[in-house]
Picture 1 (tube, rainbow, N blue to C red):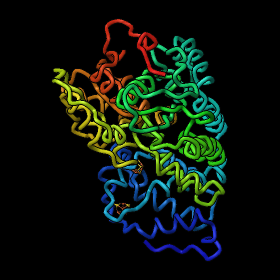
Picture 2: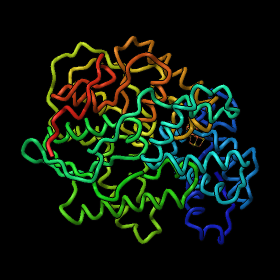
Picture 3: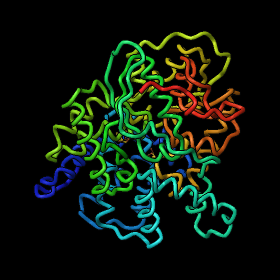
Picture 4: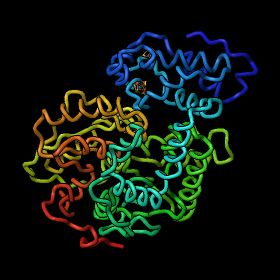
Length: 440
Ligand code: SF4
Ligand code: SF4
């Protein structure tokens, strides 16, 4: 694709990167076939190619975007299915990230939009605030019909039935391996996940220590910045990412780290991109070191000796989170690990398509998100599984709100198969994690 940026424009590193990406697109349109929003809405402007044209026009003309441009870019899930499909290697993620930051700086959204986005950015990345908000939302649920805004109603719908107590395992500390040490890894404990489901980190710590890892929860590490990054709020996302880079760099420079392990794939995609995000920052070298060590939990487990388990006689429908299969190109590891642990694994027919969760997308774009959820639940249930597994809390919340089937994190099943407790979602009775001994 030809571009007409001026020399002056190209001095801006963001524009220079977008120019490179735009020039790699040959506008063949293959990406439209796997774009969920194009499938739902059927509008070229809601396809990757359409959005690329809108972004090109906005950036080249250095213009304040109009409401139409913002609408179509806002409707993008950042699922990155288009990157998997594109034969020309167009890095759509960096392009749309730049476009979102540009919109955030130049476009004045309607007041309700600004308030909602401000609220989400002030609450979701902070587990304490988010937990309080969840309790507040639970109280407001009976009055949902009186709430005038569909996005606020969607937020009330997403509140889980049970809000777990704080897990002290998420505090900064080190967990000793239960067998001879193979690796020293930092666990990213995250933000929203800590308020929504504490079992995932608990299961990860049990599993990794059982397989010979010292697991460190680094002091000062927290939200990866993805939630605000996808809203275009660059200053906020970089501020939280910088805290992580400093916290993990201190561990790398101290006792050393073999990996920074992440069990929320949406966060993993962002941490792996820190090197790019901070390429023009004094933290660039540290950001590169952090990104180079970032691993999805399934990648790390493939390097450890996960025992082969007897058949569990349970059929698991594996839902591939977009951030894992498209963002990180990790497609087979979770399925391989589940099979090795003794589970029968099936996949839905539309396994490449997003479930509609996509960070805050299900809260900001509830109509499209609900359609994608209904489609995903239907194709998962069509496989008649006993349960559903996924590697991302956002997908778990989204799909879980549309099906009666239990949904668990892949790591909970692997922990269970190797001596941990039965995942809570599968238990008829409560199975508090605190009753399970964890080596410290
Ligand atoms: S598939 Fe790639 S090259 Fe073709 S239009 Fe889409 S982004 Fe451009
Ligand atoms: S990221 Fe997903 S929703 Fe956005 S353009 Fe690409 S395929 Fe479509």
